[in-house]
Image (cartoon, rainbow over all chains, first blue to last red; front, side):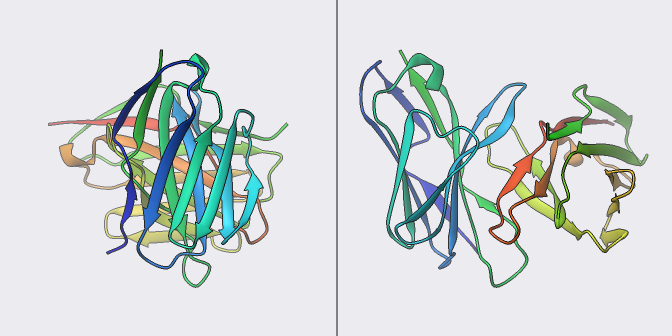
Length: 113
Length: 113
């Protein structure tokens, strides 16, 4: 079974802090994604990566950066957290070799105070 | 502008009936469309994918149709059960091969015993 894990289920940070969200997948998937999910707005893509060290901006990249140094790990970085970044963050992965379904992690509920 | 619309209101149906959820889109030419299920506090789980050249796809009690002329997909759950209660998301690929999809906001389905 594919497993996507995220470093924390719940996280509380202060405004201005640098925040790291980690995601690891164990199925050798090429693609990895970071989304945020907010009520009424649905899932919105922040960044995605289709290979190690490769990244592409999604629909809402402002205020975020990412890092993919190893194939299995994709990190989302909030350089200076703000209250409007309070949200549920979801990581996903997929492979180009089979049906392009995305496997999601359990999510990190981030609160910025 | 590009838009994906799902019924924002919850859908309540009686157990045993067929639930039909709608996904409409504008200004996309998707290579494929996916449906996911999301339970509260969890990441979405992939259910079905239908490609642009397919009219219908089935999997057990699930059926998806795709009409690229109407720009609409219908998702059916036959013989619905209370365990089918969840939020259902549609997602369109528009990245030409990078598996970058855009999600609708989802429809919450409640199956009443």
